[in-house]
Length: 377
Image 1 (tube, rainbow, N blue to C red):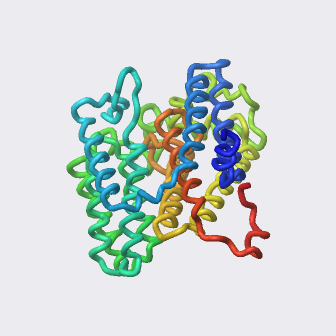
Image 2: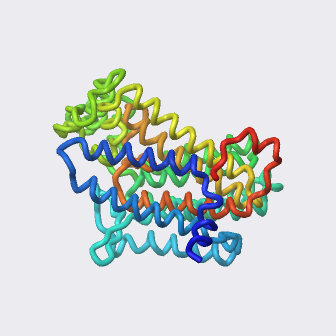
Image 3: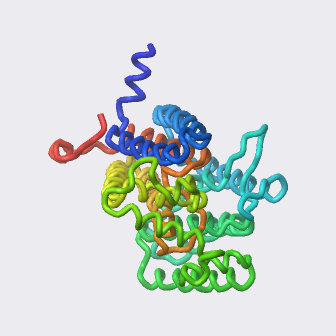
């Protein structure tokens, strides 16, 4: 019975995707472990990755078609709003943002699961109305759902998390078939919203981060310090890197938050340009395999979920790497599968497990196409 259960679980796993993800996780672990020997960061991350893998295989064996039920989506939306609201009563402050809930000594960040729920909501909404997406009302209605979550995250205040939610909505609207005139309207609304946030919502340190982004070298002893040290770390890696354990910027802790906000800079210092190229290839494989699975989704819901999940991981990686090289403001976003943290690691493995579960009832691929693709066994 156990053997047949394992065959059922393993049958539709995309092993190319899974191995690529584990390799990225391994790069993160090695980078954390290379500073002062085996650290608590390494131990905790190894545990969270292990639990995430178990969660991945459990989720891959579940039939997720119940997520198409409108009642389930409404419940998930209510849970998302409730969890974010609880942060203002029971939340723990970290880096100036009240973004963590603590239960029995275990802390987790609801924003990570909120991003996944946002994909469910948008996939459900657009899967039923994809033929009418050109109508502005559908863009507005979907935007209002997301706006509720966006505002609750901004008020923590967590500008980075809010931007992820906004870009996730924008990406899914774009792939759903928005018209050009409505696209310009979206960007106009975005500019107006940003102006309102700047005038009435952003804290002084958030404004400083954005101003530092425009010219990071103007204040390298204060707001620009992290970006300055990050660019030094990346540049000092040169072609082949300094070697694992020899990253001076990170090992001597000139680079703050090396295990979370600046894991890419710490990795690049020790692995160099060649290591960065390898990392980018791995992410490219991950995104390619996810989109390949999404393209064969059993319905529009599964297709949009797979595309939305790819957008989520891509945006996280883009913002993280962009902030590390001084091209984007430092917002504290994680690098998918690599940064330290149990909440995002377990949510990412859960999200991939759901994608594998959806792969079980995907549309069949033509034999000639399947011969030319690398697919999971």
